[in-house]
Length: 438
Image 1 (spheres, rainbow, N blue to C red):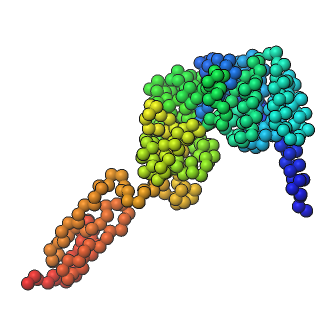
Image 2 (cartoon, rainbow, N blue to C red; image 1 turned 45 degrees about the horizontal axis):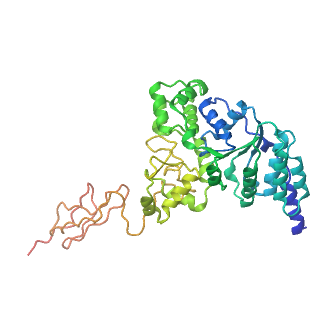
């Protein structure tokens, strides 16, 4: 028996109002974590301004840093791990109020009652009630919203913007995200109420890399090997962990760096966590520009045919898709978690093969060229064909392609005989004796 629309809406509302208690705490602290006092100090200073954003791509250590900071801070903490279901304003504020009740001494009970009552203007009433309760805080507290990039609802961000604007002095708000959230960041920066830690700040230093391999990963590497790994992965935390796992499994570090620093599990993680979550247009752009070392907007336009390649690159860089610039006006480049040889890159041609590749075939993918464009390294004007050979037979070069595996073409006719395909790049003589010339 089918349900009525009203009954379905009521059930959706009830589901949105349920609390998933696992969302109110961060993941367990992983083993082998490097203490990073320089970042803990910066995060502490940032939260002194009221609002802090920790933004970086997947695997840069955002959650680990927040866990370290929460373990060292004296502030009371309310934590919410966000997901795509939190685009529903009722579900979002249900978990925020549940987190404040669990971590801030039953603050948020009145707001929770407003949510349960429902009705028009619920979001405004909830935020108002929660702010009034938070205003009574007498001890420093922090509201942690992890993975804020997963929430895209304008209604949620509008109501959260009100909370950020009128939050009491005792409450700080800490967000982690892979990309910039749609919030009033410019106004908060201008007013001096927002500080940010971004991907360059999260990269390991060389000293931290030494500590990681020696004390946390339990891998003994020579100083030269540590420096090579550090320069290859550019301080990317998860890639360093991939190197440690490979070396710990018995592979020499030279072999790891030559064949790629990514294990199969790490490659799968990046493909699912970074590439698969992009929109269709963004994913197509990333796939087509994957073979390029330098992501110049003009070059990307030639490869993809998109006139807005510059804006696309800037937007993808803001979204934390491993794009960076060495200079403000220079071309973009990928922060690639791979070896300098380019092997086993999660966004490179080798891993984009098989039935799920853009071509749907089991061969490396190459970017499509616009009509009239020539292949890289091929002359702009095709070389002229040599003059026809004289009549008779002899050592006549074949008009064959030099590409491996390509079938040779038959040469042109010479005289009355027909030349055939021979070995060694030459044609065999025609059958019978050649007719003498008059």
